[in-house]
Image: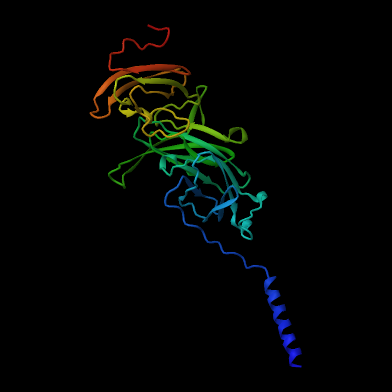
Length: 349
């Protein structure tokens, strides 16, 4: 009898444990990850959703439903294009390590920098719109020659702010959902010696198209998934047909030189399709570099620049010149410390 009771008790224990094994796991709690102290990707989550960020289907971060700036560093030593994907937490909570690819919320193919420097950081603006999954890359450039900062808004003055830029910043990558938007630029001034000093200077919300003022449209789709946008200076008539000319500078002076356009380093004025502008204005002895310079005026095919080459140590001007850059052509300046006789465009005297 005791043996029977023992077997019955043992059998009951096995059944109870088996029931526990086959019970559904309790729902996992969402615990957002802390942002990284530095990063090559800034996420602005305006979706009001709890999100999970993946790179190549591996979890990177669980992101809170907050529009607070969220920094992420994703190693990318070769600086190639990476595939980033966002999922709603509710769609992956049962098995976060194996997301259903059909339930992806947003997807962005972006060439991330290997550096965590602020000027090379990409920004992902995450909207609450769910009709489009794919995200386009906008490459913003804001040339130097001004002291004004600019905020970039979508659709209206109170719409989503996707970027703040300072003069000289180039090729700032912003991820925005496929869709149709208008761009609105707010210009402002801030005194670096006074954190409270902020002065709104004005807006640019239209551009000249065939002589008429039109909304500044931003159309993002599969045919326009990588777009370059030049932010105009306040007070300049923005043309939809900005042109570019090439300036090739060769330094034969015997010393390294820094090139200035007016009172600004030329790196703050030139256009750069990729890479970093840092120290681009310095040309080594016997070195040569070709700068791409913008021509803003709508009907113009050339632009004039006052250039100077300065000694690295004492800042003395080795040579200066007023040069005319022509759209789609290359003009050359040889810095050798000798006066330039003529710099007229080809065919002119």
